[in-house]
Length: 163
Image 1 (cartoon, one colour):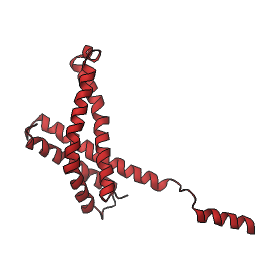
Image 2: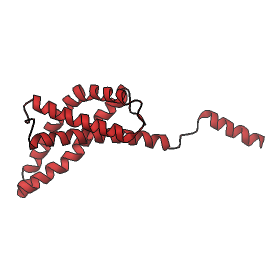
Image 3: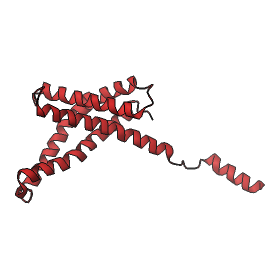
Image 4: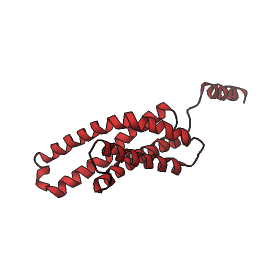
């Protein structure tokens, strides 16, 4: 299944943000639980949600401005490859690389260090997970039985009348 074209890549970018939320919510919750379990009863929970909203806002801009064109290019370069794992892997590697590059340019992380590894993991999970999800959605649609067309209904009526 190929995920190509601007509309498919735009949907993939939205899925990337959804994947980031799905991964980061439990992580933020777990970190807060380890750091200060009593804070979850107080303002810690709302601070975690506020941080998540901030991260999403910050992630939306690079995903739209950098991830979208990169996704279009990657999909174009891989257009002849039919192997889903190659596509998912390529998106994960490019997502990891771009995530670290963006964070280094913005001064959020140093090129070498534990935070750059975390940035790479975020990019790989976001882009690779979104590409897998997009392919899964296409495979699911392809295997779903299609609704009968008007021609199918007419043929069934004619067959019944002739039989």
